[in-house]
Length: 290
Ligand SMILES: [Zn+2]
Image 1: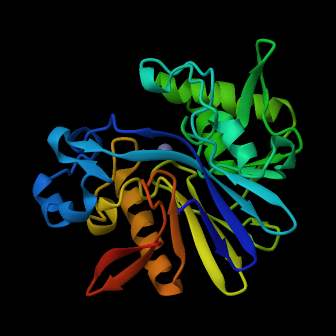
Image 2 (image 1 turned 90 degrees about the vertical axis):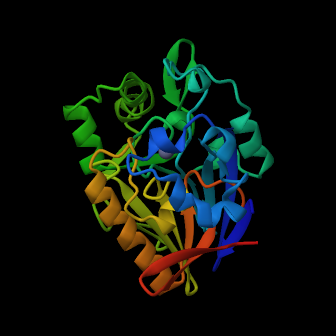
């Protein structure tokens, strides 16, 4: 599933890489291997490698063409970025932009870049290294950042060097170049997108709802990192700033997707990357898009 349509809008997934370096035990404070057992028939090996407790994460962006505008949602890790001590994110040389072009979108075509939050794996391609400086990758785009999120990280630099460097090399240069717009809860783009604050994973984390001709999808960023969190909704992650708030935002997201029959488009689900959410008896389940 690398392409889908939502009403009149087309959605294309652009993959940067697959990351299997995070373990269930290390990533979820509430991790319990027994909770995975009933799901292993479909989780393994696509989403989970039991032999080494490895979570399978895809790093990808979504390109949406509404007919009027081209919108890029979440911009992965990026090339050339200092991301030590996470060696496999450090100074990458991936053909992400070639893949973007190959899918039918040139960097010049992008009208809006939207980031669900400002962690290093959602902002990296905001900028590229040119003559020793970080410059906007998408020269004609406005970059939309949630004001709450931007102001939080500006006032409270993340102690984690990966995230702090990310803010400095992939967010601040956009603001300094005058390409950023700070947006509020409820912000609309193109009559098709609505931004909803969903704090928890980060203070200004957002969900981005796409609606067209009665069909809907939600770009959920990291409110759901991994499919198991649809079944174990209270499992927030070590990367979540406020784990209880993240779980509350996740619950609302899943309820909304179930009630409105919205396609759930998280930032890191491995193939097929997108699903409907069903709700029965207070439990949620995923129905994968073919
Ligand atoms: Zn992420």
